[in-house]
Length: 140
Image 1 (cartoon, rainbow, N blue to C red):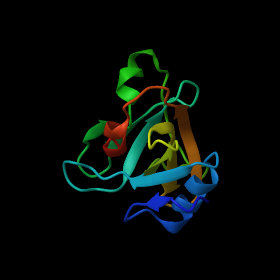
Image 2: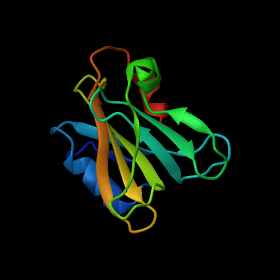
Image 3: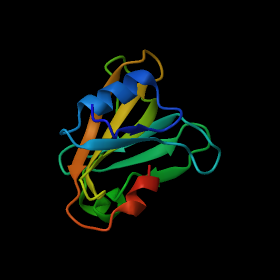
Image 4: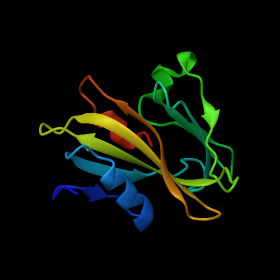
């Protein structure tokens, strides 16, 4: 954990702890996914864990949104449905943005917490090697 870590309101303690532990020693900003259409916080999530990228679908209204810059690479992605070992596909979703000393996002990590059994896991992560990156912080 880094002294400058920031955790957004509504991220469960278990998911925040997992995302903090997954960082590379840099400070992280952890942001919860919230549906822009209905305010829902439960999602089905498609991930490409090889290339990196994720898209979430609101369990409440069906609204879709890409996480961070995933849309730019989605055409070449081979996404699969995220699934908990218990069989559930509904998750609380949060994103950890690993920040460089200059404040630029350098790594995106997508963490999921199963709504059925509470299990947490890292389902996708990818490096960001461009700037500026401020826009990514709102794309969760």
